[in-house]
Each structure stands twice: as C-alpha cells, then as structure tokens.
Image (cartoon, rainbow, N blue to C red; front, side, top):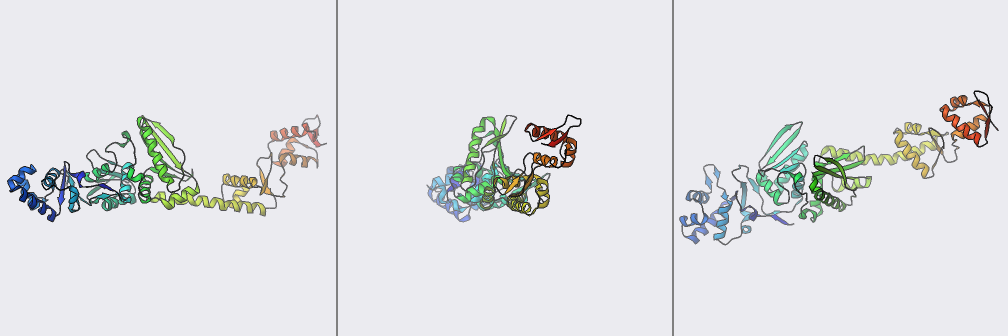
Length: 439
C-alpha cells in the first residue's frame, strides 16, 4: 500500500485545516511557551490577534475555526515538527472560502477506490477550472459508486446532484476532491488538450487496483456491441497528442493482459475537427468470460449485454449439434433454409454450421446448385448437372421443361445444357425450341 497524498500536499494556499481540539491546543500552548506571548506568536505566524484568538478557541460565530495552511505551516516550523507528525489529527480540509469541507482521512494510500476515482475523472468526469470534481452520467449505479468511493477512499464530502435533462445527472464535489485527484495524476480542465497517462501507482499496483481502474473506464467509455460480438473502448485527443493517446491505450491493453484478456490492434475510428478518436476491441468467448469474471461492469445495461453476448456463444455451439442431428434424421438432403426452420435459427447461422460440418467431413454438400442442398454421409447429393442428366435419361425435354421441373432459372439451365453437350454427354436437334436427349 503506497502513501500517495499527505498533509504536506495541503500546506499551501488557499487550503484551511481543521485539527482535533487536543492537537490544536497542544500546538498553540507549546508555541506560546517557546515565543513567550500571544503578541510574539501572532507576529511569528503573520496573522492578526483576532485570528490567533479564534484559532486558540477553535470557534468563530460561523462555526469551527479552520487554520489557514500558511499559519499551520508556521506553527509547525516554530516547533520544528513535520506535517506528518500531526496529519492523523486532521478532521477536515477546505479549499478557499468553500463551505464544502471534506472529512479527509490522511494519509491517502493506494486503494481500489482511489484507482476507480482516477478512472472516473479520466472517463465521464473531470477536474473543473475551480478544482471541483465533476462527474456526469445517466446511471444511478455509477453515480452511487462514485459517491461511495469518495467517502471510503478520501473522506465524507458534501456534493450536489443535478438533473441536466434526458435523465443525465451532474455530480459535483468539493475542490478538495479535485485537488486530490490532480495529485493522483488526473489533469485539470480540458482533458482532450492534455496528454493522457495512467499513473504509475496504478500500472504497477496490485490486481485489485488495476481491476477497479479498468472497470471504471469501461463502465464510462466502452460499448458492448452484441451484434458485432465485441466490446469497444475509444478515446479522443487533439491530433498533436495522438502518440500520447496511443500510449494510454497500450497501457490499458497491457493491464488487461494481466487478467489474460487479449485485445485487437489499436485503430483510428474517426478523424474530426482536428481530433483523433482511437479505439481497440475485445473479441471471443474466452476473453468475454475472463472480462466478466475478472473485471465486470457496474453499469446495469452493460452487465445484461455482456451476459447476453456470452450466452450467444454458448447457444451457437449447441445449435451446431442440433443442425447435425437434423441432417442425419432427414431421409432426403435439405436446404440451409430448411435446416434453419427445423432448428429455429437464422439462415446465415445455419449456413455457417453446415459449412463447418462439411469441412469436418460429417456431411455432404451439393455442387453447382442454387440453392445448395446438404445431406448425411452416404446420401447421394445430386448437383444440377446430374439432375438434368437423370431427367433426360427418362425422356427428351426442352430447356423450358427442365427449368420448370427443377425449379431453376431457364438461362442457367440452358448454360448447363450447353456444358453437357460440349462434354459429349447430351445432344439436341436443330429445331426451335431445341429438344435435348442423352447420347
């Protein structure tokens, strides 16, 4: 567990620190003993006597008296103390005059919750120019997850939740939260114009931190494409930062490999308005299984789509056996459409299974026929030329008559008749219409 943020990071303006009464009184008393008087102490601290008295009492008429960061830093300097010596006594932090104090739990160590918050700030969230952490989403599960992660990893914080319309919600946290996320590696303000990078403490962290980070990103930025049988994740940056974005995606791909999940190559999805949208995909039943079991989603709809995607692979293999059994059970060869109707699947899927069964040597396929017919091994599957020869062996016929009997296009039949005549198998008279017979 790595120490990532401590009190020293907040001993700058415009932060204000709320210390426990015990710690605050101890620091003041020891400082007074050292400098001799309140006047001397206020001079040393570079603050007014009124401010010093409020700090001593710990109250103002508005509530608890937070200590400005510069005054606390001077207090520690007088006593030759390090901020780390007192950080466990910090009750709340506030930035500027904001009333949104955070009951921070210093020091902040690496954790799955912090990793998740970094992912959310890189995904659908951002650090505003005024340092507030802003997260937008239409999934209440994701909004609740962010609220709980902030409270568990950083500390209880006030927030606002506004409906922006179209069932999309805007969640805003104290500037303290935004500042913490910035210290953890998230850029402030417009992300699209700044390099993309995954913090080293996540890339080199344990699997739980990596899992939370990946899940956070995929909940926000990925799409479960059921029809395309894939999971897609995409990010965009200005063109000048394309290399940075590519490195960012490579880092995500490498983290997925830690869970045995293989991914496609990175490709350009869209080039627009001076920006590049890059993506990669996850394919295959085994990769979907590993993603579902090792990473998973919090987003309810994506959970359902991923489950449906996995089940579709399971059903495909069951269908193949059913198609094979229907071929074996049929006394006559059947078409792909008949195989599809018999097994309640699409014609496209039926053709896919039938072709595989032929390659595996389990069934026969007709040649030169439209549509093709399929039969069990040992069943004679006639092609159109053989069908024509069989008809002509019984009687002499015109091309039109053959076309009607075999339900084939007349021009196609005429082409086949010329082929058979060229090969010396049949002959015709010179009448119109021509009559064909077997030699």
